[in-house]
Length: 186
Ligand SMILES: Nc1ncnc2c1ncn2[C@@H]1O[C@H](COP(=O)(O)OP(=O)(O)O)[C@@H](O)[C@H]1O
Ligand SMILES: [Mg+2]
Image (cartoon, rainbow, N blue to C red):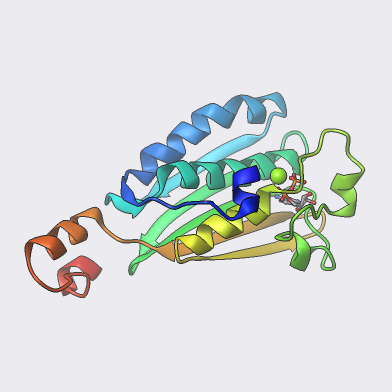
């Protein structure tokens, strides 16, 4: 975390199986969900290997699921959806937890910001999770978005370019870039 704060957070892109990666995070975090009897569901629909930083993406996804479990009452639901459409990778973590007020919502990406409800909790986090998530996603060329209704739940959506590992191979083999080929896009 200190690294990220000092601005030396480096991104490395390698062919990554995002489905396996998220399943791994799921296995790791499932006990946390089970402890609160939270139903943790995954809908992972990506077929290709993508050029991503697996270590950083793991950190990002872990942070989002950790928050979703942390800020959802026992017996709740957390759903993780990952899809790739038209060259965009979309990762969405949705919970039916306590939600975030309209006044807090714009600030959750700021360092050390914690909404009133979570500040009063003893078992809280550091307030550093989401700023790091945002930083990593932006370094990968993407954007972050949060939607929430107090008392109903929260949905965090990340979108970033999905570069196929095999497109890169083709690009090297040939001359130009093959990312525009019709076959690859559809
Ligand atoms: N899924 C969520 N549901 C409700 N509130 C959330 C959720 N995710 C984040 N928050 C709010 O955003 C704040 C910042 O999140 P984060 O940076 O991960 O810090 P923390 O260490 O407090 O979890 C949290 O303190 C909490 O108030
Ligand atoms: Mg957190």
